[in-house]
Image (cartoon, each protein chain N blue to C red):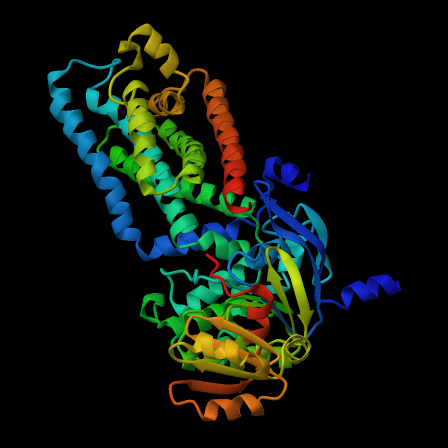
Length: 310
Length: 263
């Protein structure tokens, strides 16, 4: 009995997940759990295995090995049952272009076996939540990118799910639209919903996620609360120095920071105490610099490297 | 192992495909009038133009006026075209361009439900197409027997068969251009050898023998006698052949589409 309860206390429980395509292991044995009412982030460079992991969790791809429990159901065996309690905001908008805003919600609700009256009774609240009040009869082509994203979020909530998957929900949005989405996602966790989020934006992950995992080459390289990860992996102070010939200057003053990285015309000093370095910089006229606290992005870059991923 | 069995298992759509069918119906309803007129105009022009124009130069064909002979062929041919277009272009656009299927797969519905919904939808649309022609044929007095009403289930079955075959092509298509091969290499030749425009026994014996296996040939051999007020011969053979082709094609389409979308 205890074990059953333990299993059900997780919204999503993944262990030992593996998936290969043509002998190329895209997901190489990853495990994580998401607690109800929290936001769990999956971060990683392009090709790290995030999307494949999400597809496995939703039962759209059968894993080669590993166990997945979603909302108390085994996936992929009982994936259809599990998806009844799940909402999905996909990476690319796939709203129905032939329908109005309301029709999009009604038609989508029918896929969950909901009666039209039930769905229509929810439309007002959903559009309120998404900031789309008054757009009931608008056609999809007339909506801005941000509106489409918000409608996609509203659509994902049509079945009142316990768990919401969000695959890069703010990619391509302007800052205003992004802040609105963030605000709504926080409201969702406040209502007890579990969010599973993938993103490229480290500030987004830092703001929204209670816990997050960083994936690279199909492996989970670290996991924890954003603040804890920063504290564990990175010196608290970062000084970015830019300018001509910064590389030589930086190597000469390497001792002023715990760690130094040079990328292009920028030198990154990671320091516990940045005063001596700032002092040295004060006398330099040819260099500009920026002093800031360490962020999740620094952790990400340290763990996954600076080279481009395509 | 999970993967292999799931890939090849028989489709189990149950009745949950209905919301998918309903989605397509709702889109169609918005464009119903131009859609019906478009489906009606082309085949009617051919039927009346060839039927009366060419028909006036011909003696009776298979014992009836040429336009009467051609009318049954027109019904099944336009059913085939409607089902094929829907399962190729429209399904492909929902699967590949609009990603409608991806959106549906994130709900409790599975690919089996999506494909069954698409299959029945394409067949429904072709039924409307075939029915519209049938009504015009009746109005022109080209068919007078109540047996012609039995052509309705024949039209629907023909639609299912060509929709299922179309879904195979859809599952393999990299882009819309791909469908041209299916039309020029399969649909058009079949149209000419299945007894639509002229009796198939006019063909060389070898061609006729092969052609009689084609789905359109089975369909026309059911529809033509019914429209002329006769009971078709070998009903079970033709119905069985169409049903078997539909089932096998739908299974193959299911496996291929799983391979494409659920990898």
